[in-house]
Image 1 (cartoon, one colour):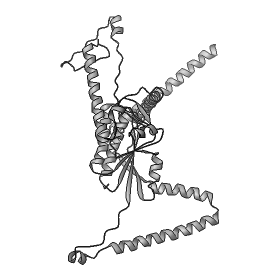
Image 2 (cartoon, helix red, strand yellow; image 1 turned 30 degrees about the horizontal axis):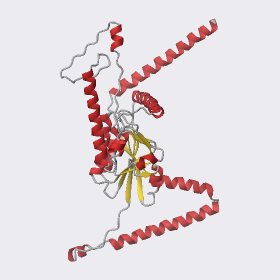
Image 3 (cartoon, rainbow, N blue to C red; image 1 turned 180 degrees about the vertical axis):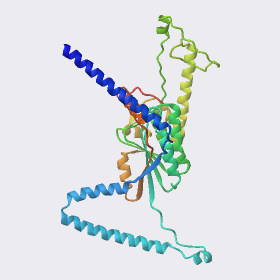
Image 4 (tube, rainbow, N blue to C red; image 1 turned 90 degrees about the vertical axis):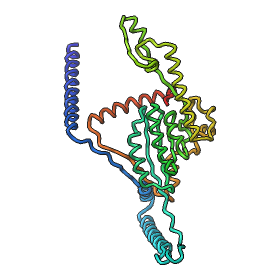
Length: 364
């Protein structure tokens, strides 16, 4: 027993020392970072066509023997050379001399440009904090995109705060306002605030078992008034305005305050239903705005989505006729920021697990 006690004491000292060193390093990094200007973020772009080609080549290389692969490479080089020559010839035939423009005013039609698809990712937490990156990505894409292009946003979110997801939806609306086709792909979940974002799109594509819908609003909080009263603890709150605070965690809630709070929730729900109805008039709002969720296959039956496909399937179907680019806004984070994000991510995952298991999440 004495040995165990000494070992326990030694272990406690070791843990305390490690934690102390970790805290000191974190504070030093944080203080050092205050004297530096925060690094500005940057846009990273990857052409998916090239990525798919590399994957295809790697598999082909593994499947073919050396002689067959050399023959394939030779045929591929010949094909690319012929394709390049045809493009060059087409460019010459479609070009029109300047004098023809002046004399006749007529000319050959220009060769159509290849469609471009810009792919963005949105992984939503309760605060919709990814909206900051989404804003930068959309601003970048809109600086070059044309109505002949397409923007694909892969949304994964179970919803969250009203104002956060309201802003995220408004960011997506910037794309449609420019008359650029917008497609939202849902592989896992786009519920509540996540569906509010998705419904802005011209087309919603979802996997067969993706979760969509949850057009409802929820608010909940504990009340400790009885506990405080039992222990003779007074709680005082001062407000100006009858409904500045309708319900509270520590004060005694009144029926009038509760009624006003429910009224505000109902009004928020009405706004949510109106928003979905404006963007998806084919949906029977009375039928779907009950707070329920649907799997992709059932969601298609009630017009919450348009097609049953995974995002991978949708993008691969366009790889031959379009140039596909992923656009991501990234920035360097300090050590304290990384630690904070790691902790926040753990909490978000815990909440998402709770939501998936109990299906009680009705955040807007």
